[in-house]
Length: 275
Length: 163
Image (cartoon, rainbow over all chains, first blue to last red; front, top):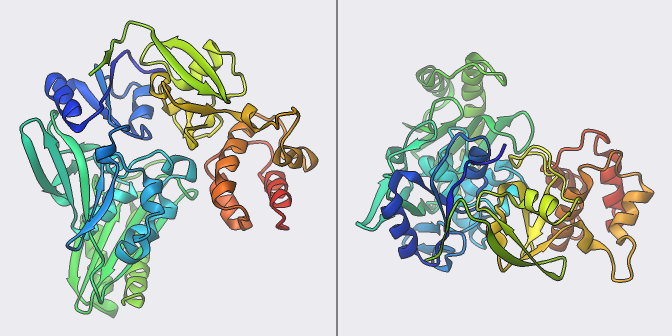
């Protein structure tokens, strides 16, 4: 339960972090809050040769809105977003998800971007980002690119980020007028990894449902405003497409049933809070 | 840009419970191990070493943190507070600690320092939590003795809310 040896760089600026990544490439890992990375280091699931600590870079510690987007920098803690003035109004889906994201003691240090970069298939923040159609901002010494959340996460704990790139920010589309949002999760205990997590967005003529914890990454599906049996049929087809897996916490069959039942509940809740 | 090499012990200086403190650590040394083995701070309890159990919880620059998910080199220049920081200047126990004692809010005591440090921060933000809020916050700590009943009772008595 101790990490392998590594060199440590406390980056004072984004440029320093990018230079460190360019020099070490795939052998380097970015350290921000450490809530996802350090357990993996302690278990020796990853053994990087260099850790680049970006937690002290003031330029990355921000939450800002512009043009219908809420952008969150890589050093911003989850607790900062949780307490952000605009959270309930601008990001109601994330606001609803927060009580399920780890614990008070982990949100205090864990970062929003770190959770997205880690890409656990049952994590709430990547699920919210994918459901809302957000983007991940990747920076390297060569430049900057933006990747849609659906193209960022490519499998369990794997992403399309290159070894020399830093997740410098994530961009959440802010709540659309006339839309409602809801989040639901089944876990052994509050704050545990989700068995199934569901995020819903409903407008006058569309519904969108994101599901975490069933496939190897968040899955999002959008329909016209289905009702009754048509909605049940759509959820059933979605559950079968996701498949799911058996593990110590739940069977694949149970996971699919949660998609059908909780999926219906969360869509109805999202409809009921349409503004 | 200073790069601390893996095979060298690096000097670290920080403020521990209000006192200037220093020591040496390799980059991979966890803050929990550093405090216990290098500085003899045996109040920092090491449980799961992956951030789940909460026994090693302390405050870094006021932020509630898992010492087992922090490297010692990361606290260079920072302020670290462990459960010893809760004692009033004249010594003895804080009011919250006294309430834990009165209500038998612990049995083996392994989880207690971490819980007290979480509460120290949490009650600054939310001085009068409801029982539901308190229990949600306590879900970040594993206590295998008490079933949390007396812990909740101790905190609720301390904040003046009856459970």
